[in-house]
Amino acid sequence: ADGGVVCIDEFDKMRPEDRVAIHEAMEQQTISIAKAGITTVLNTRTSVLAAANPTFGRYDDMKSAVDNIDFQTTILSRFDMIFIIRDTREEERDKRIARHVMGLHAAGANSPMVEGEIDLETLRRYVCYARHKCKPRLSAAGAKRLQDEYIRIRQRLAQAGGPNGDAAPAIPITVRQLEAIIRISESLAKITLSPIATERHVEEAVQLFKESTEDAASRGLMQDGMTSGQMLKDVQRSEEMIRGKLGIGMWVPERALVQDLASKGVSETAARRAMSIMLQRQELELRSQGKYVCRKR
Image (tube, rainbow, N blue to C red):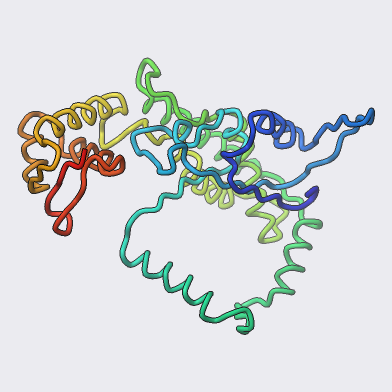
């Protein structure tokens, strides 16, 4: 895949030795091979697009990205952008996805290809030209803006982690991430065939970084004004109170249960989060269109 894009599915299923081997490919852009008495180094100047599943099959909001994905921070820090995509239940969104999937099967392979504003061949040639002919460099003003943003991102995560660093970020923000934002800025400039990556490109790159990697790194650090440690204690306390109040097979109005927990000093956010976790574990079940909560086990 040298000079192209390598797509890796089920990235979390890789063997530990393969995870170690990919470090060199992502850091040095080379792979060392020693087989049958032949030792050589192959170039791997490629972009990596990988997809992984959460550790327990479903993303747990009470855990960090590292706990959910079960990856070493050394691997996570090598990706320029990390997006956490959750399968939330939204009726309109589910309808759009269902219509799209049904349309793919109903139209069949013989359906005509829909052309956009730019035809595919022209777009392919444009991308090829931009990759080989445009080599943008960061401007002085863009470099200064990027330096200030990098310092601010580090400070935000340090403050969110608490004075003693109790809640360290899931993905460490280091110089690797600074280089990632530089690469994103230069890529945005390359799209417009600009020889210089300006402040505008840096601003867009920083916004992309905040919506992806920084968001993933801060998961679990701060939840509704409380640190993850405080929230975790409240959620665990809420779970014990729910088990104490509801026997197996009993069911109560969902709103009444939340109010009862709130009257005993538990925040509504922690109570609802505890109920959500117990629903995922199938300890609880919603009935009558979500108006009642029943304990299953």
